[in-house]
Image (cartoon, rainbow, N blue to C red; front, side):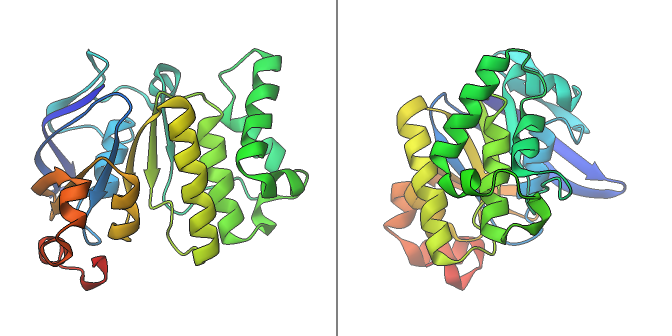
Length: 239
């Protein structure tokens, strides 16, 4: 479904990604793992068109999408739940979800998608009329994911979806994502500092360090050798 071919990305004079190549098949869940500054978020932002490759190309469903405008990639089926949630604080939960469906002119379809979101995250239904800025961090994360799903993507990107969440909320979010995957076989790429939790949810993993891929393996292989995982990413808590 998605391939990056020798992609390098700069922030000014600083090279953030160097010669990245990866492949994601339809229906797979792939986790990008690495310390802060490893290039995980940059990779997602490049896929979504927020950043343009200096060299290389991004191919989605056999089309070169390198540098295409983000709104066109949303229409092509790519959605992202960004790091830090990025909800519209002064809009209600319902209005935030409607913003996620801005390309859909089918009112019945939008209503059905919203009900699906409320079924996935019942807490959002309870907070439907509440301003997003007044929600807890966990509720905002649920809203960010649900808003991304309102575009009916075929590829969902999740940037640090478990960051700063209480354990009970982590369980709730992971349960919803597992259910979504079982029902739709949605392809997902996620970044996550909590490596073990992410790997338990994933098929494959790619480990980044200072903008380069240093290791790629199945999630099962990395889970079977947590000491090697910790060594690869240099984060003791990964085990």
